[in-house]
Length: 231
Image (cartoon, rainbow, N blue to C red):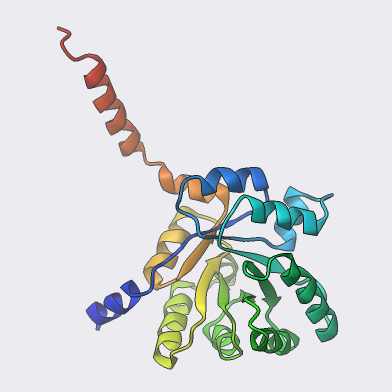
């Protein structure tokens, strides 16, 4: 069973998204060649660019990145959300992914966007049953909030793995994004549990690079080369 599951997981390549709205930092990190998309949310934008025009901010992000860029709806009624989604989608129909907050209204909006072939990212999910409903309604991505699930005292790994198993069993195309990452271990656990896409803040992404033993070994090799031929 474990071997078959690992083989199934291997058939769908994983990706990493950066969770940021800072164009300069996004450009720097995309230069690594390891990122495949960007997620933003109103909280991130309010902190990083409190005075910026949203359209200008997202266009700057699009200019320095590639892949899907998630932009979250902030209105609350169905008609307002659909109008907002139409505005954002027009910025780049091939790349803009509409982040739809999960709710009964959100499901209605999601279903209509899916019928129009608009990419969607259903956000603020805390449980497998929520992700399953979003996938049935046609979500491109379903976003599970790791840190907030843990805040409630639950282990997020069964939520991720259970969601992955149900999506694959039912043949649903939605990909699992895991966000709200607070520690490097959250990333490792999300990947091991079957997340398709961890979305990571720049500080956590940089922690993935660093290891004291790696630094020590590189310094040892470089020192040996500089001192070659010396007694």
